Image 1 (cartoon, rainbow, N blue to C red):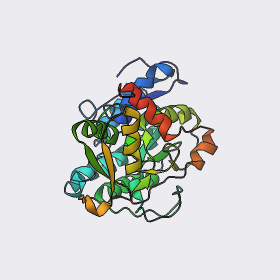
Image 2 (cartoon, rainbow, N blue to C red):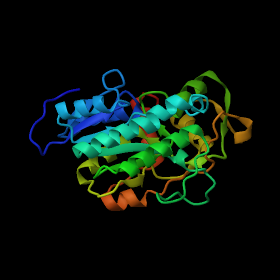
Image 3 (tube, helix red, strand yellow):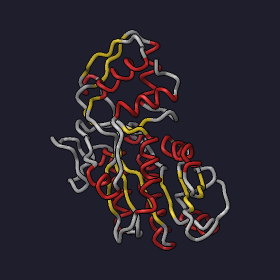
Length: 297
C-alpha cells in the first residue's frame, strides 16, 4: 500500500492478489501512471469478507478495483472445490457488492477455461460458455455473480496462457527443464495464444479511465498470433539457445486431473476497437520476458 489520497479526480486503485503474476506486473508499471495504487494480498485484506473490503475502500477512498486474486491451481481445483469456489466465485461476489454500493469500478480477470475448447474459430465474448473443469466452472460462476450484481463501469477480461518474469509459469518451467533434460515432450494438440502479464497489465491501466458502461461488459485479451504449447516450447528453447529437443505429444499422452480446452484462441477485436489499443505479437512479448530474465542469448 502506498500514497495518500488526493483530489476526487485521482484514480485510487485497489489491486488484489498483488503478489501474483499480473499484480506484480501492475506494480512494475506503477511509476508510469499518475494513479494511487493500494497493493494488497490475502495477508492484509480478506476479499472473502464484505465488511473488510468495504472498510478498506471507504478508508482509502478507493474508486477502482483490479481483481488479480484467483485460485489458479487448475489440477488441484478438481479435488479442492471449496477453496477454488471461495476465491473464484464468492470473493468476486463480495467485491462486486461493495463496488455496487460504493460506485467503484471493478476490473475482474477471468479465463479461456470458461469455454470447452471445441470451437473451430476464435472465441468471441458472447460465444456459449461450457467449462469442463472445476477451475473453469468456478471462474464462470464468478463472472455470473458479477454480471448479476452489475456494478456500474465494470468489466471482465478473459485471458489465456498467462506468463511473466514473476511467479511460476510455462516459460520458466520450460527454461528450467530445458537445461536439465536432453529432450521434452510437449503437447501440440492444444492451441491458443500466450499472454505476457506485462502487456495485460498495461492494457488494463490504459483503458481504466475510459471504462463507462451501465452493465458489466466482457472483453478478451491475449497476445496476437496462434500456436500450440509445442510451438511455444520450441520458440523458448530457440530464443534462449537451450540445446533441448522438443517432441510433440498428444493430450492423452500427458493425462491431468483437469481437462484443458483443445482450442482456446480468443478474438480480441472488441477490446481493440472500443479502447483503440494495440496488442503485441506473442514472439515479441516472449522476447521481452526472456531478456528480463537474462535468458535471451
